[in-house]
Length: 491
Image 1 (spheres, rainbow, N blue to C red):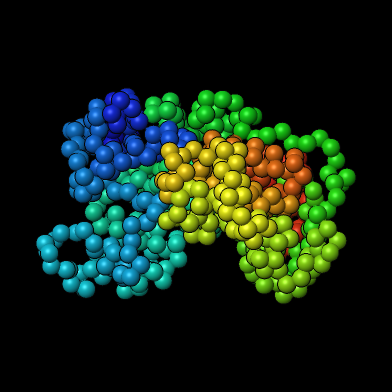
Image 2: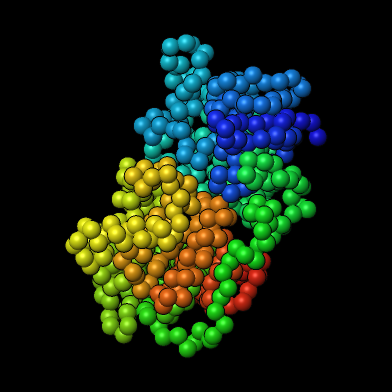
C-alpha cells in the first residue's frame, strides 16, 4: 500500500523532558491505523505534531510524495490534506451546519461566502459521508452529538483531507451512535482516506483497525496488524505488565449468603417495564444489556433522576418511596453519571472543590471536616495533580473520574451507583479504578455499575444481570466477554 504520511524519527521535547522520541510510523492510504497507549504515553503530543499544534524538536513528517512537510500551524496541516476531528468538537452551536463547515475557508478574504455557496459546500461534504438527513440550514445546537460528529467530519472534508485523525470520537456516544460513526469511517477508508484512530476502547479498535501502534513513555513500542493482536497482548504492550494484574481478584464465598441492602421490585418508567433485582452487601453487581434495554435507566430511577411509574424500592427492609437525589443521598446512595463532562465535574472549580461533597451528603456542616475528608480520599485514590487548586479540567480523564469518586466516598455511601464509570479512561487508570471499587465492596458497600465494555463487565463483576426490554432477563456468572457479547446481542 502507498504511504499517505510517514513519521520519521519524530520527537518533541519540553525543556529537558522528552514527551516523544524517535517515533517511526508509516500511515498508508486507505487504512485505519489505531494509536493506543495510556494517558501521558505521548499520543496527544503525537497528534498535535501531525496537526501543526506543536512543532517537532527532531525528525520529520513526510508526505505522500516523499517530501518533508513544513507544518507550523493547524492551517498548514489542513492545506496539505491533514484534518483532525477532536474529542471536544470545535463547532459553534449558534451557527448553522453550513456556516460551521465554511468557517476558515478563505476564498473571499474577509468577505463572508454567500448562503448559496455555503449550502452547496455543506451538501457536497455531507454527500461524501453518504449523509442526507442533516440539512445545511439546521442550527448545530439542535443536533444530536452523533450528528455533530458528522458535521465535524464534513468540515474536514471540505479541505480535501486525505488523512483524518479521530481523537476519542465515540467517548460521548452510545453504542448505536458509535456503530453509525464507525460505519462512516469504514466508508471513508473505502474511498482511500487514511484514518488515524485514537481510542481507549479496545473492542472498538479491533472492529475497525487494520494496524495498531502502541505508544508507551513517549516511545513507539510496536506496530502490528490488528489480526496478530488481541486484548491481552495490547494491554501487556501498553502497560508493560500482564493483563491479569488489571483486574482485582474476586471473592470466593457464595453470593447467596450476602444480605440484600436494597430490593427493587417491578420498577417501571423510562426504558423500564418490570425491573426487579436485589443489591447485596459487599458485592460488585453489573447491569448489562443494549443501551435502550434499561441498565442505565435503573440507576437513574433509583437515584431519583427519573420518575418511576410503578414498582417499589426497599432499603434494609424499609420502603424507599418517591425517590429524589436528596432522598437518595440521605439513604446512602451515591451516583456517578456516564458523562462526567456534562453531568459530573464542575469545570471552573478546583480539584479540591470538586472532591468536596455537599454538607447534606456528608450529614455534616463543618467545612473543616468536609475538606479534611476530601483530602483524605484524594490521597486514597491517588489523584495525580500538580496542585489541588488547579482546575479539574487540567487533569486526565482518569484522574477527573477518580476525583468524582472521591467526592462520593467522602459521604461513605452504602450503595455506589456507577454509569459506565471508565468511559474515556485509559487502561492504566481503569485498573486503578477497578481496584478502588473492589476495596469499596470489600469494606461492605455495594457497587452497582453499567459499562459499554463487555470485558470490564465480565472481569470485574461478582454477578451480571442481563436486561432485555426494560426488565432483567437472566443472571449470568463466570462468563467470558465473548460469551457476554453474544448474550447481549441475542437479548
